[in-house]
Length: 113
Length: 116
Image (cartoon, rainbow over all chains, first blue to last red; front, side, top):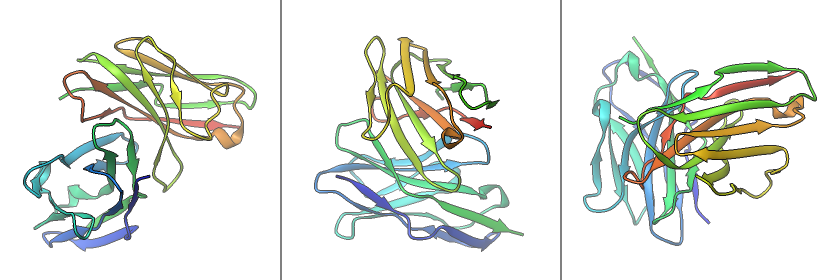
């Protein structure tokens, strides 16, 4: 079975500072990896996904993530955050070629002016 | 991008009543729809997967007689919480996947259910 661990429940950061949100997964088979963002009282929006190929994935809003198979990680990064990036971020994994998404517990990114 | 809507956005009901939540794909045909449940400050837990015209597949521990899912068309799925109790209070989120977007789910804005 697959599982996802987001070690940081909250990450406070000042505006224009860089940020990294950590995600580790466990799986005995090949997986697809995703990062979603959830703004208050809204559904989830896809930031980026890794299916195959280049391990560095660029997404929307200036976010990027790097797939590291040896460390089973898929950390999300942004070089300079904005106030508007304040939201809940979820890492998710799905087994190769299946629909089912397994989500981590989420990381609350709080950007301060 | 693909848009998924949910209705209602919020619902408050009395214990023992049934509540229906609708999930619609507005600009694409959703061959598969998913229903998730999210408790406060927790992650999304998949409840069931439904394919248009077929019976839903429920995750372990989810009572299918309690949470009735219907996916009668390629643009509409409904979740009915039957005989709701306070412990059913939660944020319910649906997502949809189309034939041409097999590896991406598009999420609705969610429905906040409060059972008194």
